[in-house]
Image (cartoon, rainbow, N blue to C red; front, side):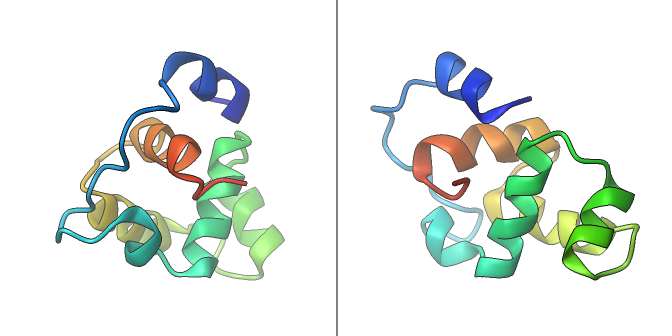
Length: 89
């Protein structure tokens, strides 16, 4: 799902949802996880994201951290939160 598509589908006036522990999404995700989320939004595969960021090509643990911190269980849900809240640039 591209950021443009998410912007079309998700109203930008929506208030920022809280992460699973009550933090705002910006507080919940370190800059490196925000970078990974941006690559996810571009449709990059896990191995491609791993190569771009110089981390394990699996990226499962990093993706899981994003999902847990945002209180979601799918990449599309994380992207849907990331675009209107500014996590995805």
